[in-house]
Image (tube, rainbow, N blue to C red; front, side, top):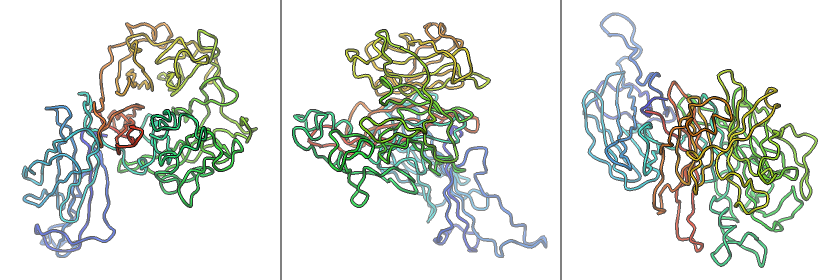
Length: 547
């Protein structure tokens, strides 16, 4: 990726003559590509001078219009304006004085400036945080992309935007994690309303279910009774539909794994699976495949966080009848096909089946009270040889230090430093990161350490990063002198109106074409006005390239 988001859409037209008249409408020969700066952005002329005696590829020569668009972030104010730069060429030559158009679903679009030589610019002034669907056109050529406006974007980053391809849907997308080269993006997905998770736990007096769906009577709500988003090809092939009435798109509120029939489930249990998406030549992500436990088609026994390092070794957190709290597991996975992490056999509670290739890492009794606690969102840190030297985790699912199974010696980010036999064997030493990272009184979650020593993490609803200059030891990790003060990188809206982005998280970093790319999850308010008072939040995956 380059500092400028380079988007292109090309169309070869039938012979029409070399004038500025718009090309005729095409049938299905339009392509939509995202290119990086080291890729060709303009189609070069191939026709020779017709007077030199060489044969011409087109007599008379016709139009070959190419429309490219660059989105950059203005830095005069925050939230930042979106600067749209378009270039129109014909056989590689800039086309001036053309009727180029720029529209946006939100904000105000300024005057389109013809800079000459085929270059055009326009500035979109935002009216708040959120998604901005931008369309740049010339005749029937169009380039469409969705920019993201945040309350604050750090100086290191360009224009945030929505990840394109088959990743984002109307359903729930979370847990973004990308391979180091950007080749595969993993996302936790469910055809469910994210806000339904919270509504199920809200007290009944506040419009929720009070944690119990059937007690004292049946709790109903569209967020917990109906699906949203796809659960079949092409977006989500193979999604487990054992708990969905596919004819009506409603939840069955059952469990094949626990032996519960329709409407017998006493709680609202989310249905999610992880999907991997391969990066395409245009920079979008497609070709989905799943990573999941075989759980009788329930889509209920699935990881809490997923991180993959070369050579395709995964770590994730999992809780079942054989663990106390969430523990960290590992196993190799495929980047070319769906992977089953293990099998659970039906029962109450379900048991691990004979096919269970995932291996629990032996962190031991990690809490001061002798309990395992929660080790969520694990992230593998490797050295220059590819050897694992630490695993970073959080305790995001801890309800509070008064809970008997909580890891009550930490309220934030932790590292387990590896030594001894090669991973996954060996021993682990627990380190609670110092207060410069784990600020007292606030919650830090979702750690990600990149190859340049930057630790990205979520603090409350924002994304921060701090540079780590210490060595691969427990003592260095615990030493505040090893860390820079965290800097704010992405900040959501201070408001929760319709369209606002009110949370960002799940940072993950790749280096693509020499540029650092930060992937993240954002929550956008889709609607307000529910009797519970809780907004309908649409969770999506975004990305932003380093300047």
